[in-house]
Image (cartoon, rainbow, N blue to C red; front, side, top):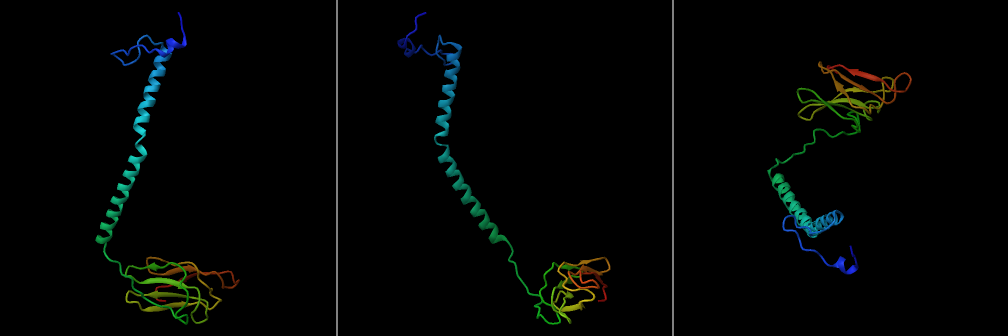
Length: 178
C-alpha cells in the first residue's frame, strides 16, 4: 500500500451512519472521536465564564433582595439596661456569664467590689433591682471569674480564682435565701 504525505492530506468521505471517515483505521477513528469531543467542549466552554459571571451577578442581586425583605420583616430588637454597677458595695466588673431562674431573675458574680473589694454574688430581678447575695472577704474566696449555676431549689454554685485558706480559690454555695 502506497502512503505519502499527499494521501494523508486527502480525506475520505464521511460515513452517513456514524459520521466518521470511511476507510479509516481504528486508531484514526478513535482520534477523530477525541477531536470531535474536544471541539464540542471548546464550543460549550468558550462562553461558560461569561455565563457564570452573569449567573453570579444575578444570584448576588437575588440574595441582596431576600436579605432586604427579611430585614424589613424582622421585629425590632430593643436593648434595656437592667442595672449599672457603681464599683462600690454592689460590685464591679461582672465578668462571667449569668444564670436565670424560672421567674426571670438573673444571678452572676462580679470579680471586684463588694464590702471588701474581692467580688460579689448578686441577683437582678426582672425590674432591674440588684441584690448582693454575698460579698467575698478573702478568706471565703476572692475574684469569682467563672459563671454560676443554679440547682432546682435556686441554690447558687460557683468558684473563685483566689482566696480561701490557701489563697488558691474556693468552691462556694449561696443558698436561695442569700
